[in-house]
Amino acid sequence: KAGVTQTPRYLIKTRGQQVTLSCSPISGHRSVSWYQQTPGQGLQFLFEYFSETQRNKGNFPGRFSGRQFSNSRSEMNVSTLELGDSALYLCASSLEGGGYNEKLFFGSGTQLSVL
Amino acid sequence: DQQVKQNSPSLSVQEGRISILNCDYTNSMFDYFLWYKKYPAEGPTFLISISSIKDKNEDGRFTVFLNKSAKHLSLHIVPSQPGDSAVYFCACKGTQGGSEKLVFGKGTKLTVNP
Image (tube, rainbow over all chains, first blue to last red):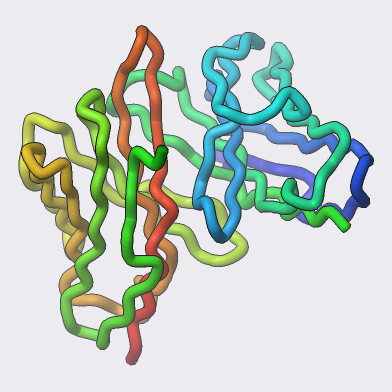
């Protein structure tokens, strides 16, 4: 079974631009979550999508948005990029996204650098 | 407000010795706890978990201990191997306001020296 695939692996953008990141979950997984990892803050939850609906949301500004398609693939968009948005963005998938026995399967991430 | 704290950003141990990684949480709603391991240029992978009804869970060289009254959990790796060198994230799961929350700590970088 293929793992979680994130594209692109690396991105360099300048302040004010916008960016779209893509995530293909493991086949059969319906929940997709997005996390931001920075050296100082660790893994911070952005949002979770299940069956094309945002089910959970973290404490990030509205510049961060996402969506999920009918095939469970997800995209994350960041508008008006700021220097502080430089981070590793991780996507994780799970079967249903809930329940205590559910484990997250992470992709390798997209490393975003904002100059 | 940091609900999940890993107070040691880094830890260095000798091969063959025990590695102990600690994690503290503040929110009583958390009742399931997980550890993830992350190598550079890879996503985190699930390592071991424990439910709040237990105080210990063991899987090979990895054991997680939970002290609910102290809101503290720890991961023990015995014996430590160089391949265990990675960043370890503690994660706490619980339900609040009808919504399930999974909160990660900032991670501890473990280095196992040969």
